[in-house]
Image (cartoon, rainbow, N blue to C red):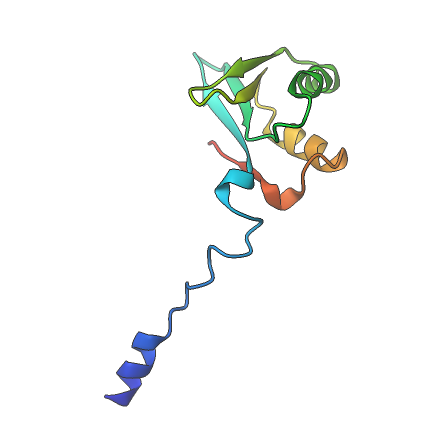
Amino acid sequence: MTDLAQFKTFDAFEDANEGAGGSSADKVHVRVQQRNGRKCITTVAGLADDLDIKRICKAFKKNFSCNGAVQKDEDGAEVIQLSGDQRTNVMEFLVDQEICTRGEVVLHGF
């Protein structure tokens, strides 16, 4: 009976949300959305407000040889849309240019 009491007081997942690179508000979310057929778009959301989003979008377009645009989402935040599946390219670019760390970038999709 004492063994069961010991397991009830211990929570193995207590610190799972701590130290994972900050809260979800600090993360940069890179998603891919299917359009029609083989076409898809990559969206980059959650970049800091003090960054020049249009300049980052221009650099993405030049480096990845793809089209892109800056859109506003429902919350009024700016989101970068890129044509094609550019998830890994975006993550490597953001880390190489020291815009954010690897722990702050979250890849979503397929």
